[in-house]
Amino acid sequence: MSAIKTPAHKTADLRIQRALAKPGATGMKGLLLWTEAAFPRAIADQVLKAASKYTPGAGITSRVPTMASPAQGGFGFFGDASGLQLATVSVDIPDISFDTTQAISDATQAPVSPTTAATPSQPASQSWLADIGGAFSAAAQASLGVMQAIDAQKIFNTNLSLAQAGKAMIPTNPMQYGLPAPTANIGLTSQTEKTLLTLGGIVVGGIILGSLFKGRRARA
Image 1 (cartoon, rainbow, N blue to C red):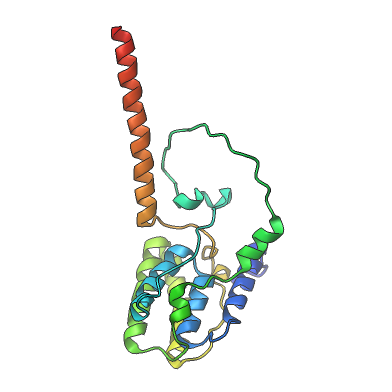
Image 2 (spheres, helix red, strand yellow; image 1 turned 120 degrees about the horizontal axis):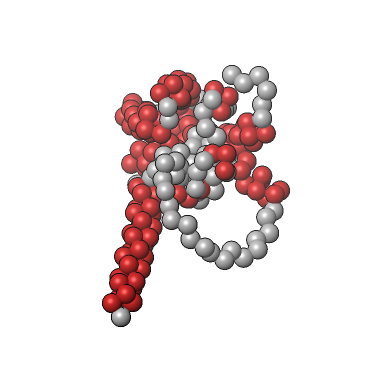
């Protein structure tokens, strides 16, 4: 565990505390509130997807992706773009005023998806526990390193047992164990992959059209 908390650690702490201070933050609902506040979206959304089977019609998530910082090596809405080579495109960007105070406030606001809101605060059933636990394990293994996934599973299992008993969650901050911040963009979602494929098609199409145009000019 980190001896000294960075501002990012403190922001995540406040985010988790606010989530667990919401009404009904015990049992099944408590676990989902903590998961949304404590883990990156790539992991939390898979848990919410599994939980949505028990709240039909509620939807999965209403959260908006956050832009990754340069230190995270990501492209925000496009997730982690490590190893990708994209064509440079010149774009005129208008001046945008940035409210730092509002940004900090947004980062500490615990998100609540429709699925979480519709989930009861009662003790979790065995089937619910199995589905939620399986979804978390698969998402952690797909999105994190081996040791990070193991640590994440240990942290998650503690509150999973409390959800089974219908109790309040322990406000554990996974960042203290070296896991990514809850606002970090990790992994590639299916939508991200579709977006990258679309962009790739546009770039390739532009190259082909450019080559045809040059060929016609040469023949002329």
